[in-house]
Structures are given as C-alpha cells and as structure tokens.
Length: 403
Image (cartoon, rainbow, N blue to C red; front, side, top):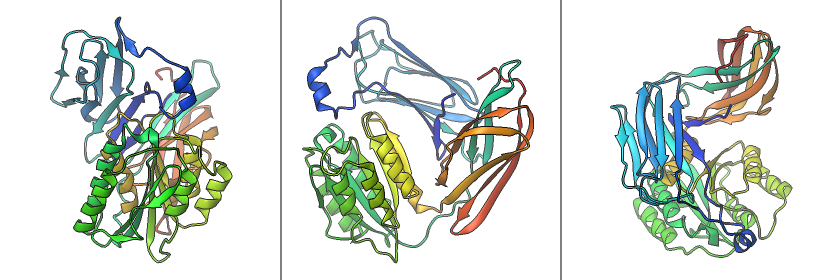
C-alpha cells in the first residue's frame, strides 16, 4: 500500500525522475542519458472511493486522460509527444482529453505528477484499505481519516515570516517561487503583518521588521523578491535563526520555510535545529522543493513546532502548493491528536505520534490487525484548547486480497 496525499480535496501522486541538483560532487562525476529513444509509457489508474470531477497532469501536454467512472480515471503518457513542454493536460468529468502529436524522444528529466480533484461538499469520513490473505491470522491495514470542515477561520491579525532559500541550486525554480510568494502575500488580511528573510551562505532580511500587509508594501516587496539572483550555498540554520528573531509574543505567528537543499554551510546538527525551533512559540510550515531536500531534518523541525511539512516537486504547481500551505495557518487546527482502535487487536501503528491536523489535511495510519469484526475508531484532540472527540465504527475483514 502507498498513501496518496489528498489536501483540501486535491489528490496528488508523484513519480520522481528529476535529479535534485544540489549534490555538486555527484553532478561533476556522474553523467546520464535522460532521453528515451525507444518506446516509453507511463500509465496510472486513479481509483477513489469518492467522486473525482477533474484530473490534471502538469508539464505533460501529450498525456491522454480518460474517465472510466465517478471515482476512476486512467492516464497514459508516452513518447508520442514533443519533448518537454510547459502545457498542462487536464480533463473534466465530461469524458476524455487526448493530445497525441508525432513520436519523439522522451526526456526523463522531470517528475511525473498527477492531480485529481474530489467533488466538492463531501462529508468527513473514515476509509479502510486492508490486506489479509486466506488462512493468515495477521492482516495489514491503511486507515485514512478525513475530518469534517469544522476548523473555523482565524479572524484576528497574524504575523507571517517567509524564509526563502536563495542558494545557487534555486536558480531554475526561483522565478516560480517569487511569483508564488507574491500571490501568497496578496492573500494576507489587512490586519496581518509579514517579514521576508533570505538565506544562502548567510542570511539577511529583506524587510526591516514586520510590515503591514497593505497593497503598497505587498507590491514593493514582491518586486524586491523577484529581483533576487540565487547563488552560493545553503546556511539553513542562519535563515531560521534570523526568521525567528523579533517575534511578537502577543500575536499568533507562522513561519513559512521554502528550501530545496541540505544544510551544507554553518550549523548542520539536527539537535541544534530542534533546540532553535523549540525556543519560540511559532508554527513552522515547510515546503521542501525538489528531490534532494533533507526531508528527515525538515520533518523533525516541523514536528517540534507542531507545524506542517510537504514535499514539492519542481514540476509541481508551486503557486498552488504555497497557497495551500499558508492556508493552514489561517484556520484553526486540531492539536494533540490521538487515534484509538478498540474491539479488535491492532499493533505497529505508524505514525506513533500524530501531532496536529490542519485544514484540509488527512490522517493516514498504517498498522497490523488480528482477527476480524467491527472496531470502534476514536479520534481525539483540541481545537483552541477545547477537547474534541470523533467516533465511528468500521469493519476489519477476515479476508482481503484486493489491495
């Protein structure tokens, strides 16, 4: 079983192909032929328990997308289209969309990404995918909890700190990131404030302290961000350290970190990063760009702040991903989440510590179970300090071979 991330009704699957581009020694020593001159095909079946009303494949204008049913679609990509391309193949629920130009060499230098959009207005749910062969006492399960939309918007003004990686490896993606930052700033409320911190070998602040989110300040600093030329190494610790300075204890703060690499300049020890984050009462929202970002470090920092982290391909809709990440801080969150399953024996639950659930986020739990029958699933947590409990019943099968 492999979980597919669904966030705010948008599902996403990534097949990684692109080189991360941050390991200079590897790039200098190793070369590869990324072009496929013979037959090449990539086929995906999207099968959902809920209606899917659109499927989208960015950067693959030759993709063939076919709707099979309410929750089932097929996608085919092959070397019968132009090399590269920035167009997007997209099909609505009306049927099939197909573009099939003349055959050409296919380049394996970009990740393959499939998005699908669930029908709007779906209720909260609990879904179980299980595998238990005939005669086996132990089964494996994947439990997906989709909370209802009862996380309300936060009405008071917030402080935002954008910490942006401007190291040399960001050159090919920085223009898209700058556009995403501009659009995120435009989404801020009039009573919000923001700071912008940049880092490569060292760190510096583009703003001079917090700036009110007025139309003039947003336009001014958007232009300043766009004018930056990425270069040099990645001193992630220095960027975070500067971003965490001068936070206002009387206002709710969120720090948005965007980076594509590893901490290769300055402090690099994981413990130092955790200690730095825990000194401040701030939620860290991390977007890890590309395939070589140090996800273990970024994940542990995010968990230490009870924040949210997402991996982002260079072929992703960067603007959409950044807007989705910042939307997490504009609504209430369910903190201190715990999941209990009673009525059937379970073990080896992963993740062991859940932490927080943010707006639009699913909880995916893997584990083993013994026996079969009806189980009671209880999810508990706190919203704005108040306890919340969600309960439902779900059958665990004695035989499950379809997954």
